[in-house]
Length: 142
Image 1: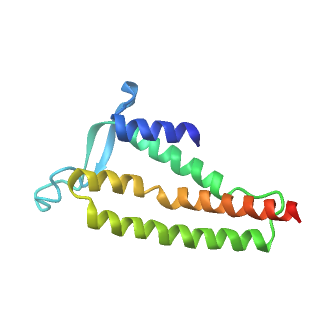
Image 2: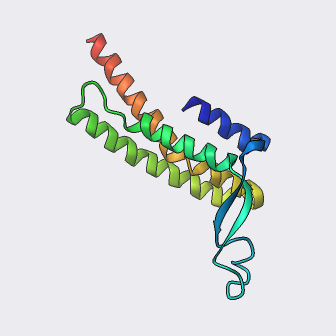
Image 3: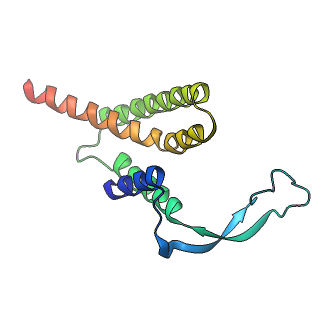
């Protein structure tokens, strides 16, 4: 997951692209189709650099593996922590989304939505691991 975080940071904040990933891709509802939907095609083949998409896919897949990998001791308590962490992450993500709607505009809003797309998994992983760590720490003290 760490390499995908580094790549994602470089793509979002430094406009990094791998030159060898310039490929032809299928674009559904290409640019301009929202403005003139009747005369525009529903799809077309375009040239695109696939680095942004690759970074997003790598992060999502690796974060899902990290978030939902089975614990050595999987019981009802772990399931309860997972469910509570997922609920907490959902609430946090939508609060952040509302704040972005209120305070960010134009390209800053767009960039915040790109980042917010991954917030659910990030908050879930952080909270879940924190609760697991805290419960193991407390049980070791007793």
